Image 1 (cartoon, one colour):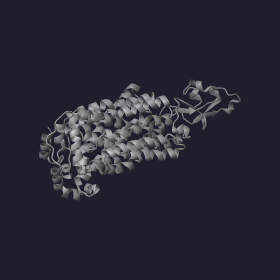
Image 2 (cartoon, helix red, strand yellow):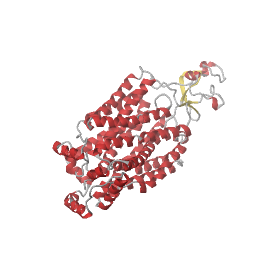
Image 3 (cartoon, helix red, strand yellow):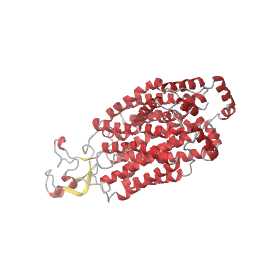
Image 4 (tube, one colour):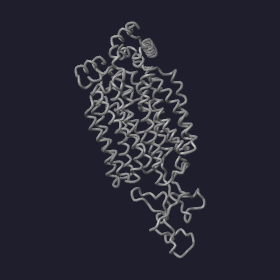
Length: 546
């Protein structure tokens, strides 16, 4: 059965609108779980308590009072006070009083403080609760983000196979509900190791939810509507980050943040009844009667009349014609290595995923490190993804997949480097604008990478290939939390320059991929190999779609 042709008669309408809301809420939740560690394991701005100068009343403590310059050493790269160092008392002054005067402090000698700090904006994180304070423990905080993405690296290939074997809906529903339960359990962690173990477990289980949701959504619409439909869906993604920033700014407690953010996930059990399984997956499984049932449901909800559908016998006959191909495809991994075109396409897509994930998540994390209110900064950097989704649709409608992806990688990389070069010469507003432009561009690039990956691989392995590329992409997201460590030891300049260079390199790799705009989703390896290599075949497919 040609599902795309049958969908034309079933129409685009109320059914797709309802599905967009359902899948959009799921995508919103996937971003909530993706950014939680930025706040639960976030580093704070603090300094040593100076008993000689700080008030006995903690409510009157000020992070940077006037006298701090002669009591606490400052970092030359960030312009902020050292977190766990203070100037020693000047014993040569000949006095034993605790006066808050410059002469009472030796600005050539420092000493450590390990028990009392003054915070710019206090919040209860795993750092403050599990004793992960001072610069030497910062790697333990950044490790949480790397461990989170390592869990996805482990879980994504497994979830892809589960999705292809048991269905997209099963992966989406079970993964989201189990993850919510684990995160709520994690909020009761009593130690840092326990927190890390549960972080790996939750992220590995949840790793396939976005991919499964993405495939379910994409397979509901016609090729010429994919970009618009997906762009609308992606507008839900940044809302998840904004919700986390809002909750974090109000509760300022990592335990409450985890519980409040994951209550939504428990309600996704209802998707077992509210959402339909992928029609293409069911057809590949021989469940033709269920495919017809879903198509009839879509037509009924959209108030359309379906064309004559083939009987089960006719569909079974068509299935038997492809039996030899099915027997050959005994292993998806063997199929990948059997086709050099598919194999090298996977390698290039994986490199793009690594670059997109590294820059995207690196900018997310860096948003809380730049000057100003970190919650507002993070919300703004998340919000910019909403216009990115709309621009993505306009750009991809007017430009080819390759040109749009190349342009966005290049723009993101260039603005990162300009931000880096101009840091000392422009004001905060302009720096923040450059930062947001870079985030907007990489957000569009990430969206195009998802769409392009889904369009250039066949149905028989689409979920697995999407999962494999996403898995390799997690190498980038695993490394991205270390951006804060890079900034800690080498300065914020090198971090932005490094992200910019990676984005520009990805732009170059984009040129080598095939063009897939307005091409029918390939169902077999042969169809996938022809994309970009057989213009006449592509033209026929486009004319059929239109």
